[in-house]
Length: 136
Ligand SMILES: [Zn+2]
Image 1 (cartoon, protein in one colour):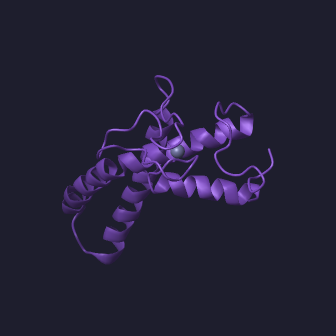
Image 2 (cartoon, rainbow, N blue to C red):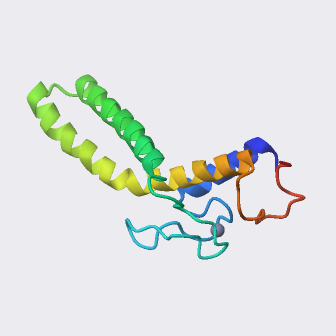
């Protein structure tokens, strides 16, 4: 697996809310509660206080993009008044943000894992066969 494939695989695992290291353990044990570590390979998901701030940035960026696309769509495809448009779009954006929060945390767990792997700070040995993995 080359570097690009490795990054793509890790990010897709995060988007599916699975462990970025092994792809088998689930990051969440319930809708909003994260596991401390992967139940399969023991990769830690949240190592120190404030480690999930990056997830908030991911959530903010994606939610704002969603809100902008929603507002532009309403302006283009409807003749709603600005007040009614805001009354419809604001709650939808808030609901989207609430729904997307676990995904943003899981994506950040994957990004955090990639940073550890590329900086050489990963505390666990590679889970996959080293022969198949991007050569660090
Ligand atoms: Zn794992």
